[in-house]
Image 1 (cartoon, rainbow, N blue to C red):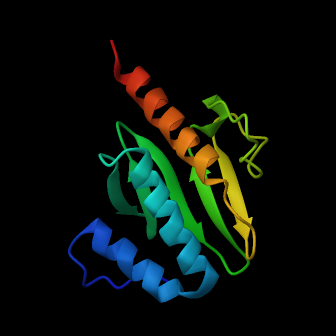
Image 2: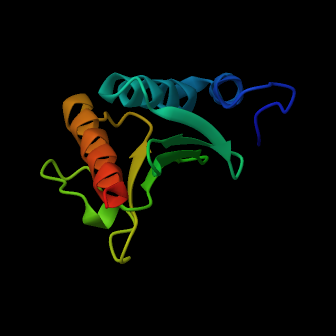
Length: 129
């Protein structure tokens, strides 16, 4: 599965992927996108590795859709404070962390927005001399 390649921008490719998925996975990916842009409207949408990628001064997270779950992978998640305990996958690695959501599961919107903002701040602090 991959979004149509006739779109000209990453945002259009993400739109296509959401439409292609439909159902609960498309709705969840659309909600994640909305929350990421709510956290900071300056977040850049990209299309890499055939998946949506959201970046600001580095990758914040990717949005992968599988048959049974949607995975939100934070490449630098191990360095982020997660007081709400959103991370529930890839917990053993030294760098990345992920949030796996299955059909019917809800994403804590406030905690997710706060996590995205912490990821942005972490990326920005890495760029400072």
